[in-house]
Image (cartoon, rainbow, N blue to C red; front, side, top):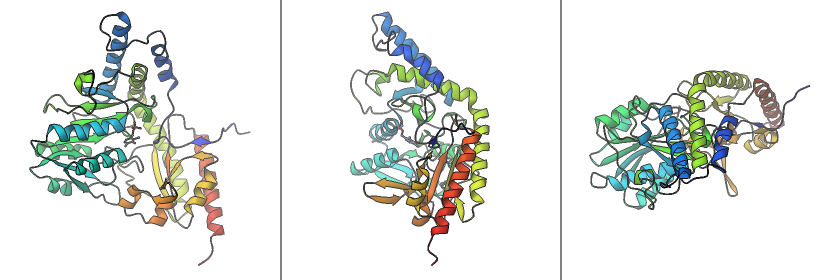
Length: 390
Ligand SMILES: *Cc1c(COP(=O)(O)O)cnc(C)c1O
């Protein structure tokens, strides 16, 4: 008898459950230790501040930063906005040109669109069929007016990892700041702001087994010292870069989540990539099935697969009662738009529609993966058998 509980969650790139260890450390900060970390005149405030400082060390350590370089935010969307808009405003005297890439998260792309409306210039680099940018194209796009390169660490839809270290070196050579949205990479693979030559970086707790609504922006303090124009004015919290009372329980949980990831990353990565490879190899046996994005430079827990000769809606309807995952068709109101990320890789609309993103997590078991393999194979074979011969 199987003890498998349905549905099975394979959408860890959308969000992750809180680790029980994370929950546990957060709880006292909702009740007894409810202080405001900005209260300087009593022990409630001091305790909260101490807890935030400890979490700042934990998050900094995970990415090789100094605690002073961590600005707590409400998540990666806010971090992306603050990094891009903050640099754009602060470095206006130097220039107004930003270089990014077409497969960035909407939090980066929509912020860049906003910058264009303000009069800024943005270059959107294309990607190859692996989902990776071309370094020569990047270097050629830099002008004397370029102030920022904004390229994500790893893509949320395909898991493709950009050549971050080489991008950092190019940025440094041309005296341009390098910002990376590392929301999908931090906690999953080693990220080191020094070795990678990163000047600004965003991450988010809920993508790494921490709570929702909290994240961090890393802002380099030396070689060079990066300055930002605040986007939220107020009490001057977080060195004036992000005013607002700190989410103390969330930050404490984020710190713990960072610690757990740092300790378990290697073992967890190996375990997840073994399960991911098992899943991927089994589904490729179906034939007329393609992996989207790089298979060599990729996060350990993600695979994005297109199934040819299958109706995308039928595929999702056949699966989503038992398996929680994302498809390559983003539902925007009534119409089903194929994913802009897959389109940028050169995937045709039809194949983008019938693609699935599987993202494995900390609690995914081999038994679950075996069930998913059997279920997906069954649905794909059934849909292909029903297909009118044309
Ligand atoms: C999830 C995600 C975001 C948004 O993060 P929030 O903390 O939910 O705002 C931004 N960028 C990437 C790459 C993501 O995966």
